[in-house]
Amino acid sequence: MNDDGTRTVTEILDELSTTSNIQVRSSHELAAEVNKAASDEDKKRAEDGRGPLRRRTDYRAVRKAPRSLSLTPWQVLHAIGLGAAAARQGAGRGLAEHWGSLRYSQALEANRGRFLQLSS
Image (cartoon, rainbow, N blue to C red; front, side):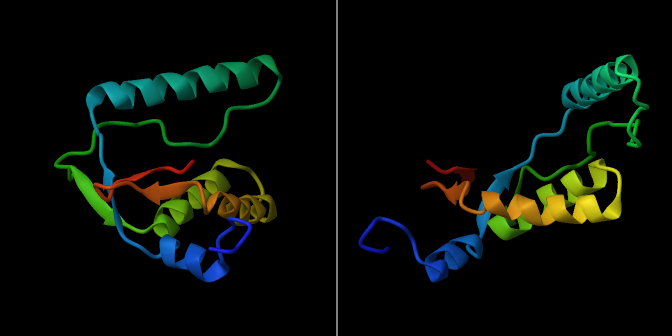
């Protein structure tokens, strides 16, 4: 760490490459909540005169989902970025949003149990 309390690039990259555990929660209730949120968003878009977003409509619980996965923050951020990019229209805009998600690279850290959580 530098004298002013900031971390070096090497320290940040090391943290982003450190494997942590991610808890997996997949249930019928969660799938129903996602379906409801998507429906609510489509209703708002229709009221604003915009069409519905192209998205999956058959959300359901993942069968035999593992209780946890071992991933690095880089892998998590990559998945979030891909999801954000796929949710928007236009490839250029999506790519910009994907790389924009890297600004959150210091938002995740591993706790004592090696599970990812939001950093301070």
